[in-house]
Amino acid sequence: MQQRKSKKILIYFFLLLVVGSINNINLNGLKFQNINNINITGLDIKNKLILLKEIENFNLNNIFLINKIDLKDEIESNTLVENYSIFKRYPSSLDINIEKTKFLAKINKNGQIFYIGSNGKFIKNDSLNNQLPFIFGNPEPIEFFNIKEIIDKSKISYTEIKNLYFFPSKRWDLELRDNTLIKLPNEDISFALNLAIEFLNDHKFIDARIKNQIILDDQRN
View 1 (spheres, rainbow, N blue to C red):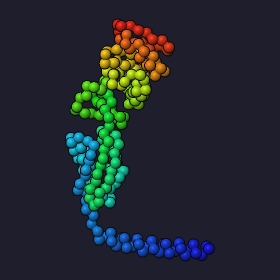
View 2 (view 1 turned 180 degrees about the vertical axis):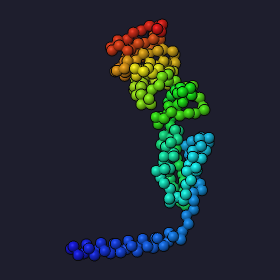
View 3 (view 1 turned 60 degrees about the vertical axis):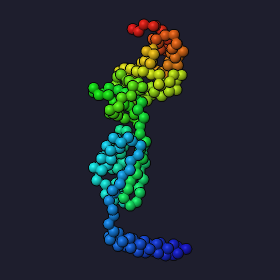
């Protein structure tokens, strides 16, 4: 039994050498065509051209020798990209399908207006969406996503939020589009928000910072 296995191993090894030699002979005489067509979908014309230029500066060679890691790094460095897929169309084309990130809020960073994308990145964009809430303060993206998740699970719609105020103590205030201000605590935020929402129709100032208490006042302090 052992002899049969040994013979099989020798036969496979011999075949591997033969096939490898044939492939090497063939490859030495081949010249692969460089990539000459890159198709990008999912972005507007302006941003597609920007990404295309970045990829072309990467000096892609033929389709068989693409460094996938470097190419992925180049695409993922674009702040507009949420997800993507890359397809090779032989012999010399690449199809790159982009899922663009969703803009969730605006924020002022160092005197410039950025969007926070659903990909967690700060995005500089010339367009201005006045329907998105504005963030005052300097939260990390994860801190924004935490409060947005709480809002999304509450009885109020995120589209009703006009401004979000973030404080160094990690606490949030919410200003609605009807100018109602809701002051939230550091803990049990979901419970406090849903409790505050019960008083929305009658009051423009709702302080829910104290546990199990709501302070109401039509005049802000």
